[in-house]
Every structure is written in C-alpha cells, then in structure tokens.
Length: 297
Image 1 (cartoon, one colour):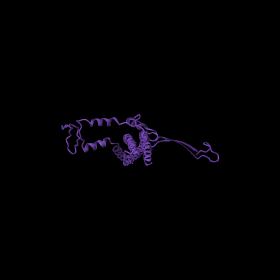
Image 2 (cartoon, helix red, strand yellow):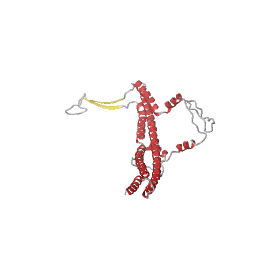
Image 3 (cartoon, helix red, strand yellow):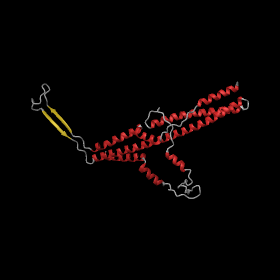
Image 4 (spheres, one colour):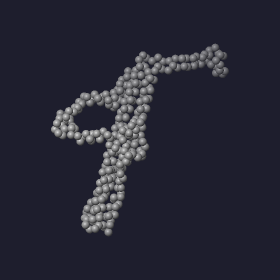
C-alpha cells in the first residue's frame, strides 16, 4: 500500500509542473526599442513638452499686441443719445506698449534656452526608457533560459523518479532514493512556478515600457546580436583585458602583448559627460536660463 502511494505521488508531482516549451517566435530587442521610441507615453509627453517650449520662443521675442478701445462719455441716462448733449463724447483709442530696450531679446533668449532644456530632458527620458527596455529584455531572456534549464532538469529527474519507483515496487530499489527524487522533483516544480510568475511580471513591465497593454503575450526573446559578437570574441585567442589605472599590460592566451586603445582619463570622461550627458545638459541650461531670467528681472 505504501509503495502504491509513493508511485501516485510521483505521478502527481510530475504532472503539476508540466512545463511547456518556451521556444517560439522570437522578439528582437531592436524592434522593442523602436516601438518604445514611438509609443512610450513618457517619451511622447516629453516630446510634446519640447514642442510647446519651442513654440514659445518666437512669442517671447514678439512685441506686445496693439490694443483698440472705444470710450463713451456723458451720455444721458434717461434718454440715451450720442447727439443730444454737447458734452457727450465718443473716443476711439489705438495703442501699444513699448518694451524697454533689450527686454524682448532677453525674453526670447530665456525662452530659447528653456526650449533647449526641454530637448535635453527629452533625450534624458528617452535614454532612461531605452535603458529600462534593455534591462527588462535581458531579464526576460534570463528567465526564458532558466525555464528551459528547469524543464530539462525536471524531465531528467522525472525519469529518475519513475525508475526509482519502479525498482522499489519490485523490491530491488531503496525507499530513500524514491523519497529523495520526489523531494528534488517538488523543488524543481516550485522553481518552475516561481520562474513563470517572474516571466509574467517581466512581460508586463516590458509591455508597459513599449506602450502596450500589460496583458499582451510575448514570445521567447532572442539574444541581441552584440551579445553574440562578444560571446564569439571571448573564444578567440587574441582577446585580453587591460587596466590603464593599474598599468597592466594586456596579453593574449599565447603570452604575446596586444595593442589596445588605452582607457580614457578621468578628465576626458568628465569632459565627454559634460558635452553628451543629457542629465548634465539639462542642469547646465537651466542655470543659463535662470541667469538670463535674472537679467530680465
């Protein structure tokens, strides 16, 4: 009776996990990045804000609009008329304000710099979204590979559990082997469930980043081409690693020295960050805009 119970338990555990094959139509990283550029709500809002800031530049440098007014004075209340009383007057006024010299040019300069701030902010948001898409994509790739490995291990352990149960049922096996196989099979089952839940969450996050509904299904992701190139290059004999800071000479696996481009210095990195970093570009131009606004005040 006890042997029958163990065999039934093996059948239940092996059917609980039931991992389906994750190999399906692949989704490329480049396609998701392009979709995020065009459909991500945060990027769209940033671009709309940049367009609005750009439209304010010519308005800030334009002179004030002229005003047209009509004034009526001394009109009789009891019997209104424009010609009955000699003191009744009708006035038509046309005027405009004359801004202080250089005020319009400074206002336009402030608006122009703030438009640049909006453009750099759009770049910063776009880079952040693209980074998040890459991170979510690679996380999803890892989960898919982990699911595949778990499925293979589950199949192997299921066969081992069935073999142990068969041997134990005919009296040639050991009960401890059967129990040990069932415990490991249960652990793999739990691991598979956890990975599948993790994949559902990863797909929802990636869908939100590219502007899709969270419940849109996504097939197996593929390894990006640049990662393939790095993986292939790491197998070559002439690839080595160096550190300019530590002064290490790069060598290949045969012991010969390699000629590689040295790492940039800290000052070069800081200069490149100041010229190309969207986050720094936003703050630098905000400071410039406030300085112009102070001059305008």
